[in-house]
Image 1: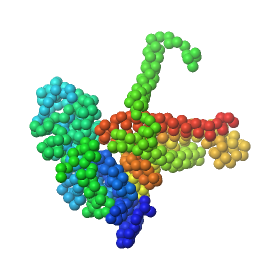
Image 2: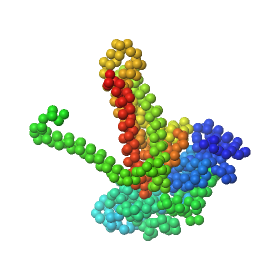
Image 3: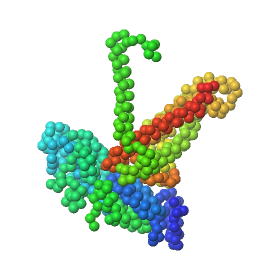
Image 4: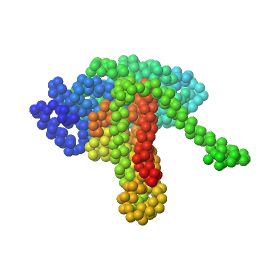
Length: 288
Length: 287
């Protein structure tokens, strides 16, 4: 990719120097291989992190590449924690973090690109229509283990939770003020769609997934239903107007203030030009 | 065979017969159900466009062209590294070390342990060693090399068994004829050991092509057409996993991709077996 770079005066020396440093450290694909001129952007961006965000950023990357044919956006996945770790180690130019930034991550530069709500789902044929927060806490801590205790049929509850390191888990637990060790779950899952499939396949299951995913699957006839939380219906609409209580910002992060290609990409990902992609991937664009 | 067996004589034999047929029938039924399910859901989506077009909208629409290319390249790297090393090690273990020597026993034991290591461990190792230490980054090369590490134990152990299955009389006859050890190895033992090598290869390719955990951290998630071995490229198995578990509405294309994966596996196994049997093994059988 280096031969495509349009070197110009100063930047040639700067990029070359940083390229040599990085090459000698044996870390390819970091910020060094980028160069900017006023109208042309080239080089490779490596983005890693949350699997929730990966399809969205991948699609934004493709449109970005079509605008700047010499730029390459490589999106890798593996979870928010990985995104943060890779950015800190310099293995990635940009990290994807599907939650609010933590206190110990405050020195990273975070840029919100969209929002996502986390909704509680049951099987469609479950006759329970609503659960209070206290009931949800009792179910997830194992204090209530039968649907008849919350107004349902006499059947054991299958509790579905997300694996450690998943942001959906952190957002959900934060809202209910629980610790991960308090949760007594029968099924531990990874990605959202897996959660939907688990609940759709088990009439007595309860789970929580991204609202966008659940809304799409409901519209496709998958037998699940979203419960309202605190009296607010779970939908992308209530996430957008800020009334739905369990929601999370989706961030992209960098270690240093972004420049060049990184800066251009982040500005593009935050612009209105990608709102259609955000909706297409069942997330909620930020109102600006 | 059927003619040589007499009909069951008493209830116990009947019971045994029913159990054996039942077990075989169950295994076949599970396989047919699985294959039928994939063909039923996937066949209508597979077309020439699907095989060549790039994925669109996170894989919900479009095809799997770049993903097929990446998968083939990853497998190519894996086999071109693991075959020579695998056969070499197998030759050493079977022909040049005694069955009971400490070295032989230790090597075999460690290979058996490696063969049972979960693939995610190979993935993390590959990420730490090939991607970071060697600086190959997320690339088809890293992915292929990681798979090679994973496939090697299986390949070595079954090739070694292949060599051991060759009767000692072959070696003695060759020595009596004054053939050198190298000549014996290349022209006699290697062709004779092909069945063992094939078993290892089929198992190894099967494990490699179905791999997700070891590849997601090494060859990566990028679904663009790769331009070199140093580009990141998404393997078919990762694409299927992502479409079915991470992308809502990706099921139809996940089924179609799974069908392509199964066909690809059968085609590779068929070709490799044909090449090995007609290219090498026939030499010895015809002789």
